[in-house]
Image 1 (cartoon, helix red, strand yellow):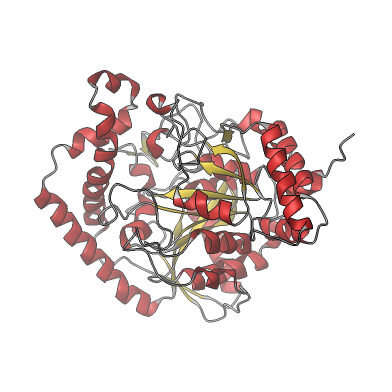
Image 2 (cartoon, one colour):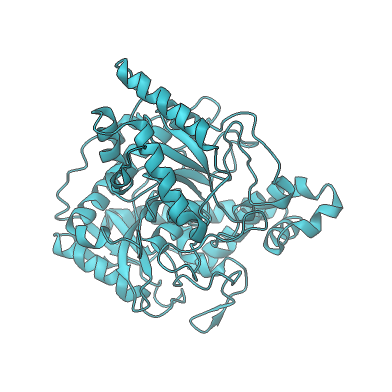
Length: 481
């Protein structure tokens, strides 16, 4: 009978990597424990999809063990089970994008992120679920169905990296990848009580890509239960690539360094609800302020901050940029007009709105984006980090498409209820969602910390200090996990 090692699924990724490399546990044992954890929890949450057959996974695990026996290691992720978000290509696996039109598409090669994680020794066991085309911060689609919140299966997991966040929270993966355009690494992290990081623009190149000059709002990045795991995965994902001319050239090995840091004196600017501009459901601001109080107790200086330009101007420019980038992604599927009935309304809305955009409108929105970025620079002369809630709503019913109103205010688009996340994205700044606590409803919420331009490393160190000061909170597990 095969010996069971269920405890390894409770390890963080760094501890698991150490246990594998010191042969305290074999890659086969890790794989068996991981698959058992998935068998137990995934039927209820639907986080992991397109699973690879078990014999193929065990054969790969055995090869990783054989390599270690020969004194060979591929890297930090050697033998680590990994599921890739279903917007990214993995050779031989389906990339459905959550769309019925793509349900049978099998990738012929790996995307760059999958290449890098495989090169570090990861074993890809399948994909993580995502909304159709990655649109909307709620993970459901017509191919696989909804992913359910790790803490309450009647609630949304967030998105678009909802499958990744739930798989992490339920200990089905030691670490996870995701992507972030409008909070897609941050919102589901906050809603499932894990850490999610949107790296600086250009930190993690997205390849293959049709455009590498204009389409810079979406980025891939890491998600984890511990900040040092987050940093280590970023060290694997990051790094310049010749096919991505705007990628950052900083050596990604810096993210594998020591995170130990005394945050005393760090100046944090609290943006809150932007002085009432952003509607927020009850309890969210209070939970985030309790997290800020923890930072104050660590010696940080927390003061109120204000954006340097009217947020409605930012939102209108954002809408133009989003439609200009998302519309052309949907357009190829509409070459056949019969496909329209198989595409969700939100994606059709983005496409149809984009048809009316002019070059002059995009240039005007780009000028607004430039003014916004430049208005952030004086803010970072007064503050080292900015803080804002990671969501404006608590996880809502999984049967909803999106909130039609928020705190009594009607939402005029399918994504207006997530306006809070656009500021880091639009300015190209790094941002980490850290677990802030739980509401009276028992559901988790995250606090987003936003760093200076290309300040990923300093942001990681502050998040690590926050984790060390809140270990009891961070260690909380979903029911039954």
